[in-house]
Image (cartoon, rainbow, N blue to C red):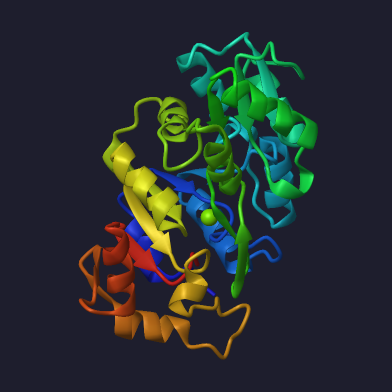
Amino acid sequence: MKTNPTLFHITNKYSAVLVDNYGVLRTATAPFPRAYKALRELQDQGKEVFIFSNTASHLPEQLCSELAAQGVKTDEKHVITAGSALSIALEELGLKGKPLICVGNQATEEYVKRAGGILVESLEAEAAILGHHVEEYNLRNYSLAWKLCKEGRKPALLVNTDKMIPIDTSSQSSGPGYIGKQFEEQTGITPIGIGKPFFYMYQLAFQRLNGLPKNRILAIGDTLETDILGASNAGIDSLLVLSGLHAWELGYVPPWIDPSFPNEKRALEDYLVLSGLRTMIVRGSKLDLFMRERKLYPTYTLPQLQ
Ligand SMILES: [Mg+2]
């Protein structure tokens, strides 16, 4: 099957594409083969394709292997994560070379080291790095971080800001961003966000794109509050796909998961009217109300990346 001509139309005027991982290319449990195929086709068309993920628990080389297993060749330069944006954040916040407590898994710790932080497990730390998902979190370091911030009034950095993650297309679970919320309630310190929608990852992308004009860069993501808000704040266009986090709220199921579910037809007929290269959302439709409620509009919307 050829790439959706609508995707071609949309991506035509851009030279670089920043593609979110979870919800766009896969859920936590299943890869989306057509999305990976679309990614290969974008690369074949000469686009500079970056994986642009809020993760702090997987290193760029791990994501490269995950992509290779789906037939997509890329290198670490083309993988930008919230973890890799820590290098910019530590520099800007004056924390490079400083002792830091890390609440995360091994990959989070590696990110802190690569960014020039010094890992400590004591209250000498200058800041706490909150990186990872609950199931692997280091409770000892969490309580040290808690004490450091609550009593020592030191800053905390929240690397992965995702509050929810898609498990599959009909369920989701709380994401690492919840650590930040919980931490704030417990310590009174509002963590500094590193991942999308904050600027650090975009700054890293702009650096790696060597001054490519912003109107040549498109961000693709499944979440209004991170991918679309972040792109809008960074001054670049965005494409929202409905295969991820918002799928269950809007009743979408990608066709490779349930071919009998008439998403595309319904999405195009009920929700979207393509007008030139802009996607107009039908006023009063479920999608329109959903976006209006959040006061966030992407430049384009498609049922899924394919
Ligand atoms: Mg996502």
